[in-house]
Image (cartoon, rainbow, N blue to C red):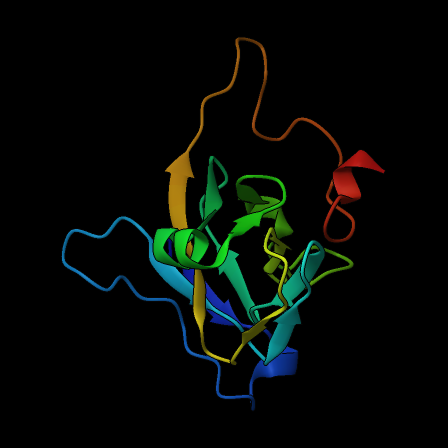
Amino acid sequence: MHKRGFEILSSYKDKNIALPERKTAKSAGYDIATAEDVILKAGKVTIVSTGLKAYMNDDEYLGLHMRSGMSIKNALSFINGQGIIDADYYNNHQNEGHIMLAIMNHSEHDFFVKKGTRLAQGIFYKYLMIDGDTIDKGNLRQGGIGSTGA
């Protein structure tokens, strides 16, 4: 049985999407690239498709972080600081689990991103729960970004 990894979404199978990889022997993060060309508008947030989904153990999440070079050189960040992909986001009832990146362009100029540009890195983390909480507590996830706050 597989513990954790990445898969290409069914709707992106024929779009030449690369699975994330670590680029050095001691890299913690798996580089995540864009699934298509996109323009990040100056002073705006843009939702960027990756064409990917991630599976993991129930007590884990995938943390999404902006690649530091991309952020520093181009004044880009995730609007929420760090993205969090929960284990139940994968293949849930209403959403296949598409990993999307909410990127803020802090500069005064639009920024063109070519398909395949590595914008983010994903790191898998274990998390802890408080006393009396259980992994199966709560409702089943229905939907995508922001669905648990609806």
